[in-house]
Image (tube, rainbow, N blue to C red; front, side, top):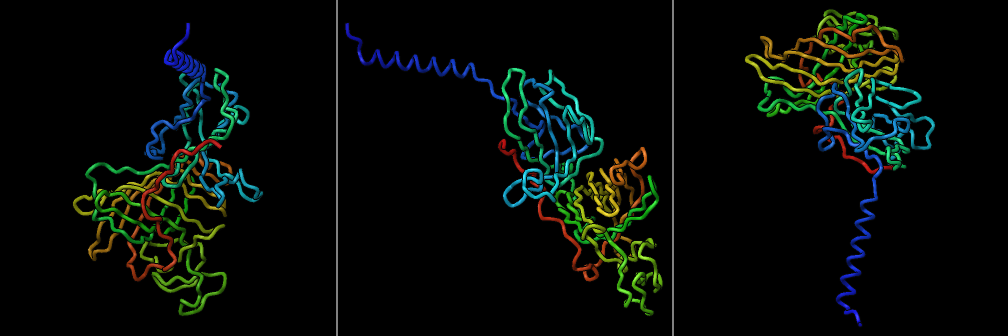
Length: 370
């Protein structure tokens, strides 16, 4: 008895489908990290725990993860991946079974299928970050993710629907931060703001301001160790002398070059009120190389409005989650203080004040395993 070609073809296809189906049923993928709540590379609550879902229970002993600043070289390598011994990965959060937790506390939940990392300070808003899960991550079924996994993301500000601001203007401001705790000090800053009047969202670049060392500005030239102060009256003064008011902005110049200079990005929202605008900034990190000071989770809440002459001025408060001197935490309750600001007329703004990058932070997209 001969089998028809049609019958043989049906049998062959059936056997092939059965084989493929059996293979698919047997295949179990390795753990695949995903950041919960990540949308288009963005998260919106920088103080909330970071939740990483692995898609299946994992062996805790094989988990090594970091959150770091995303600063690749031209070849796309991170500082701990390149051949340059002078580059170093800036780690913000870290967890592994040998070294424990850094930057907060981590806990495996949901039968070891998720990691909940609660940061000790708000994570920076704006800069691009990268979640790194090292190779060797093993599921309880035995499947291993061999290569390092990268996931790019950023924290961004999302203003309330219907918010708008015409009272907070785009421009450059001179800002005085009066720190009350943990140490009494004054920080002088230039703040260049780019305000979206239709949404109330703003992006700012805040830069260290130092007293001008140009002694020739004073009627009597100052020595090399002095700074020239023109307001309230001309005098040669110590460069560390605090500003009396924000109106003394002409006595200061931007300093963004490390080790003593620095500049950092700030995002926030402004909402018009009857005679001005209420302003809240998202947590930001201010990092100084010399002296080695980091202010983590710096937040400003203020009111900006015109004075009798029409000049925009601001007053408010500031808080910080944690302040570090070197690797040591200063105080037990973060930082507290007050702030004042003035919008500088365009013709008096120093030409080298850094401006914020255009557009909101894009946060990047999930990258393939490496």
